[in-house]
Length: 163
Image 1: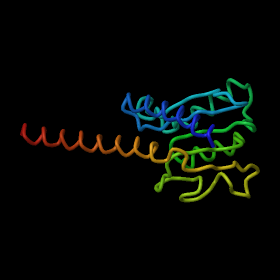
Image 2 (image 1 turned 90 degrees about the vertical axis):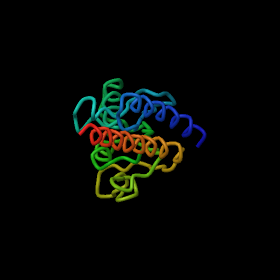
Image 3 (image 1 turned 60 degrees about the horizontal axis):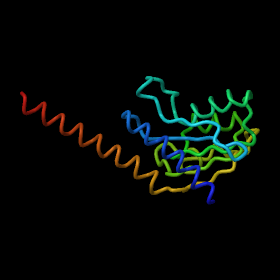
C-alpha cells in the first residue's frame, strides 16, 4: 500500500496540471515493472474531445511506449473512479490492476454504480483497489467545482449589474 500512495501522488500531480488549465482535475499514471511509463490528465475541454479522459490518454501512451495493446502487467492509478468508457478501455487493454482515489457516485464503474472491471462475463478482470488518498483526490474535485460555481455566480452578478 505504501507504493500505492506514492504512485497516487503522481496521479494527483497530473490532476493539478489539469486544474491549472481549467480542466476537471483528474490525473492518471500507469506503472509497469515499478516504473511510471505514462502520465496523463483530463483534456476534454482543451481538446473538445469526449474521449480525452486521463485514463484513456495514459493507456494510449503506455501502449505506444510498450509497443503492445496488452497491458497485462500494468497498474493504472487514477484520482477518480473510472467511468464506463474508461472501464471498458481498461478491460480491453487488459490492465492488471486499477487503483483509484475518490469514488464517483454519478458514473463510477469500478464498484460504485457497477463494477465493469470485475465483470466475470468479460474475458478479463482487473484487480481493484479503491480509496487510496481518497480525501485528497475528492477535495481536488470538490474545490474545483466549488470555485467554478463561485466564478459563474460572480459572472452572473456582474452581468446583472451591467444591465
